[in-house]
Amino acid sequence: MYKLTFVFFISFLTISVLSDNFDISVNFESGYQFKSQIALAQEIRKLKSKKEIEKLIRNQDWIDEYSLITQPFKNKILISIKNKVPIFAVNGTHFYDDNLNKFNFDYTYGEIIHVEGPVQDFETILELINLVQSDTFRINKILFSYTNGWDIVSKDTKIRFGKNITNKKLRNFKNTINYLLDIEKIPSIIDLRNKDGVALNYGSK
Image (cartoon, rainbow, N blue to C red; front, side, top):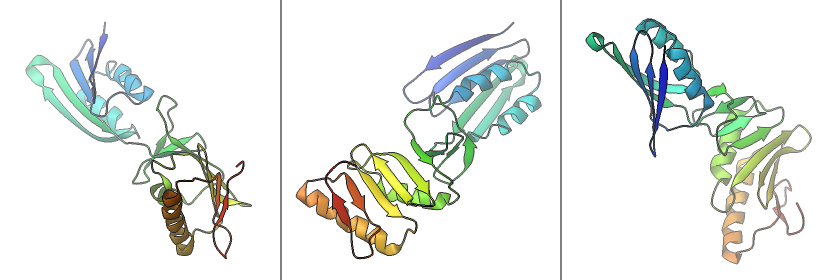
């Protein structure tokens, strides 16, 4: 016989698991973000020892850090879990965090930058996100192809970096953004592929 009790707070989620063996409290410091959190609690209540519980937690690729404290005379276990925070998802299969740790994609997670294409250079993806993501450009997805290279798509603008991300292109982008903020006019396409400069298109993207 077991019971799961969920307690939601603004910044964290606590799940109480009552099984035949233990009274377990699982505190998710980041709040409810993954369906995997609920699945983990359901698996924990089936286990019969602290060793089994720790092994299960260590096998979760979405967990960044955890602590486990036992109160033996009360058969109580207190578990605190901090999950990895995804920055982008690649082809709907895996998340990556800001340290480029890879873990399984979970459709229950909220807004995320989706990367599509035959990508292998994950450092470039993170570099582009850090460069572009702002109040002006909220990235929806990043597209990569061997033909067109890197395209970044926001709600109103497509930014075309091409195949090679050079320091010159990065400087040109930063200078272009400063110019666009000054004139308060955002184009539908910013094309950085031209060696002679940056092409701006105010028509359809």
